[in-house]
Image (cartoon, rainbow, N blue to C red; front, top):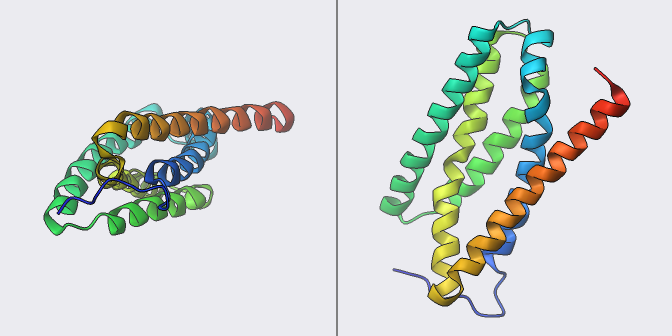
Length: 166
């Protein structure tokens, strides 16, 4: 069953998910500029281990999106995948700082990227609720807020690095 296009009384899913994406990407992109340095200087990982962590992250991202898209369609449930995705990413990022070994960081990065399961179900909700006439606007809002969060996160990271140093 496809939901009816959104009315003016309902919150716009593109705005709601856009705000969540903004915050999520701000957090993610605060970490991204310092990630390799953290892994090398703080945890003592070598370049091969850093490559393994990031390669595994890409694989988990792709597989979690594929699995969540399929499962959310089959189960006709979107919200559990979205909430779980944001939650697992947030918790993983909050615990990166406590990692002391390659295996811990590998596990936590996998959990962070497993959170990408939120994408396909979230996009399905935006598409269904936007209606055909406003679908481009809905995705435009979602992607713009996502990108804005990335810019804000990277900027915060830069400012902190300038003022706090290494």
